[in-house]
Length: 301
Ligand SMILES: [Zn+2]
Image (cartoon, rainbow, N blue to C red; front, side):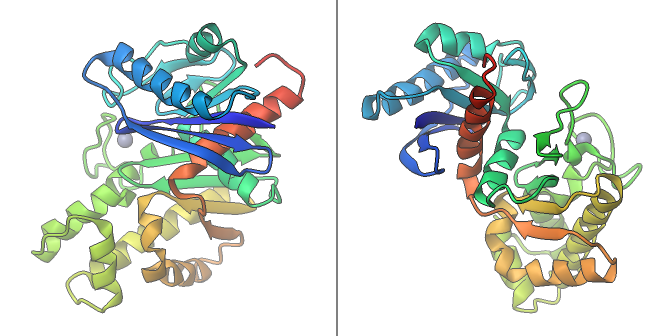
């Protein structure tokens, strides 16, 4: 049993053929053509799918995780930022079924990534919250083995929960959002502003932290205090069995993970806190998981 999993982002569209045991058979990554708006993005998407279909014809369907807010019942992108120009309003499920005559399941990219990480952990948890700390901060919730998408398909937007009222301005229009403090981008910006050094990425910065660099020490400590506070807030609001943390920042986890766990122990947080394991493959793998689950329920997808 094989299906195509797709992860649509503003920089690249990634696709893979994934089987029922989570194994990836072929993988394709293509730069997203954003300059021509919706048609350019769709052209990148069909090129990705066509290349995968050249390798495998026995495909059950196509699962897609895309940036933006998705009405999963209709398979429609109901909100999208300028990262994917013209994307808002597209009915992606209709497009896929009309183009390929295959079943399709469309979801938000963070929901798909959560499904992938959950699958990868053997589906042992009934409730999981997922946080991605990358260019931005994304999130998703699973409650009683179902992704909780919210009334307006906006559930799990942890990046725009306010951490510091009247804090840093956020591109969502509010101030003090978690994204402005916990994204990898925000951390690098803070470090460059306060340490007098110039870091181009989080990896160098975390290395300096582990090496005991005095200027970077308080900045990363503050970052991890904020992260521990967010995990604490999740523990008293959602109260999941596990919080999985992913995104680019997790690639440097060896330099900071133990410090986070120490801070959580101090807060008496009683849940499993786990690093994501699938990296940027989580969305593709999870999109296939969501497709398989929808198909196994016998309902239309
Ligand atoms: Zn915001």
